[in-house]
Image 1 (cartoon, rainbow, N blue to C red):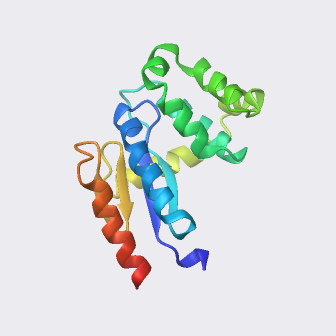
Image 2 (image 1 turned 180 degrees about the horizontal axis):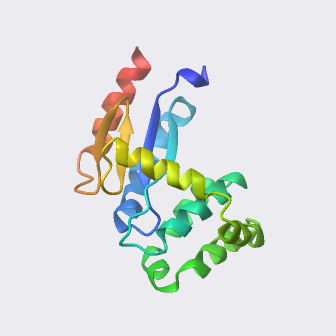
Length: 165
């Protein structure tokens, strides 16, 4: 039953070097659990990163086009360049991974995904997210912005327990 599977919310922003580091853990968790764990990208653009809000919207458009995680990984792989190049890089990455880049550009212009990003950010603030990456599973918040050390193991303990119940 897909509705009964555990959900891991990954609060992330695409201009954050720590989120790029966290991708290895996310990949490992997805490989280990496959369809038994739902990994959800949640947006928490930080004010100090001026392109992060646009990147969150672009990630939503990429998800709508069926390539959410590949897009997130491709943007985070170029996080330093993104800081310099800004929003044109978001469209370039879309084109490189085979998305409809013009549609992604249009989505950034018309703001069709702003409400999703705003809602994620508001929910994150409400549950105490202050930085990225932050993981939430089974009501427990794990702050990866301070240190990634031991977080994957802690998440695995929680998931294993939830799957055993």
